[in-house]
Amino acid sequence: MLQYDFNQLIDRYHTASEKWDGVEEVFGESDLLPLWVADMDFRSPVPVIEAIKQRAEHGIFGYTLRPESYYEAIIQWTQKRHHWSIQREWICFSPGIVPALSFIVQHFSKPGDKVLIQPPVYAPFAQVVTRHGRELVTNPLQYTYGRYQMDFADLQQKLDHGVRLLILCSPHNPVGRVWTKEELTRLGEMCLERNVLVVSDEIHCDLVYKGYTHTPFGAISEDFAQNTIICTSPSKTFNLAGLHTSNIIIPNPRLRQIFKKAIEDHYLQFTNTFGVLATESAYRYGESWLDQCLEYVSKNLEFLIQYLEKHIPEIQVVKPEGTYLVWLDCRNLGMDAKTLHQLLLKQAKVALSEGSTFGQEGEGFVRINIACPRSILREGLQRIETAIKNCR
Image 1 (cartoon, rainbow, N blue to C red):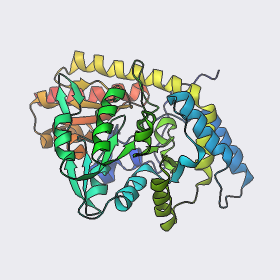
Image 2: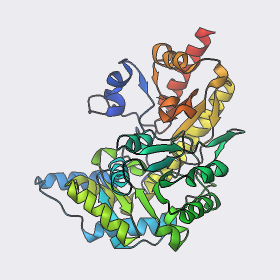
Image 3: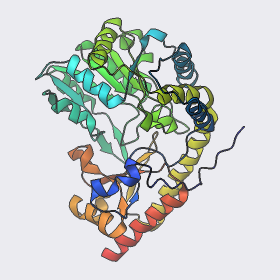
Image 4: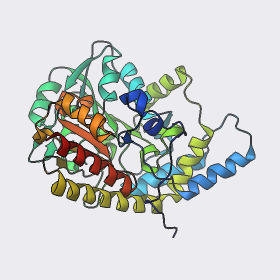
C-alpha cells in the first residue's frame, strides 16, 4: 500500500489559490499564514493525479459525458463507507453544493417563504436564503459544557410557524458535530409532521474521527428519503474543490425532476472533464489516502488541543467529531471581536475565519483549518501565542 507523506511542505503561492494567493484581497494583509479556507494543503491521492495526467496527455478537452462507471463509483463508495444503497437515477449533477442550495431555495420555495438554518453555520446558508427574497429563520445551536446540541424545543416552535425548507449541515461546519442517528431522527420526524423539506449538506461526510459515525439523512427511513435532498461531493474528502463537481442525491422522483430542470434551465448540466475523472478515480482508488489523511489530521487535532492547553489556555477547543475545521472559543481572552480580529491579522499575521461570519452566535470564536502539515499548524499557533503574550 502506498504511504503518503502529509508532512511535506508544498508551495501553493502563484497557483491562483484562493487560500494562499487571495489572502491580501480578503484580509488586506499580504504576509499572513492562511489557515482559513476549507481546502487542504495536501496533494490529492496519487491515482487521481495519475489519471488526470494521463487524460491531459490525450490533449483534447471537448465536451464530456458522465459515464456509467462514474455513477457506479459513487454508488459503491456510498455503500462501503456509509452503508447506504443508493440508486443510479437518484444521483444528480451540480457544479457545486452552494449552487445546488441556491437552486433548491429558488425552486422549492416562493419569495417570502421561511427557510430555517442552525447557526453558527457556513455563511452561504444564510446568503442563499436572503438573496432570493426568502425569510431567514434561525434555530441556534445550544453551546453547553464545550459541546453543541440542537435546541429541539426552539426548533419545534419555529417549524410550527410555517417553515418551508430546513437546511441541515451534517456533519456541521464550523462546530464539528457529527449528528447521531437519534438526533437526525427527531429532527426528521418533526419536519415530516409539518411538511418541511430537509436539505442536507453532507459535504464533510467522509471526514469523521474514530468513535463517530456519519448517518446519511436519507438512509434513516424511506419516509425521510422521500423528504430530503442530500448534497455530497468528493471536493472536501479528496481536496478537489477546484474541479467543481458535486452529486446531489434525490430519491424522490418529483423533487428530482424539479432539481434537474433547474440545473438544465441554467445550462449547468455540463461536466468538467477532469472533475468527472477525478471523482471516479478518488472513489475507486483513494480510500487508503483518505484513511491515512484522517489519521494525520486527528494527530493534528491532538497537537492543537495540547498546544493550546499548555500555552494559550484561555482559548478553548470545541472538539470536533468530524471535519478538519476546528471551532475555537476565544472569549476568555477578554477581547471584543474587532480587537481579536486585529490581533490575529496585525500582530499574529495569521488568517483564520472570523466567528461572526457564521452568524452572530459566532461572536468571540474563530475557525481554524488543521488540514495542513504539522509544521504550518505549529507556526500558526506560535504566532498567535506570541501576539497574545505581547498584548498582555
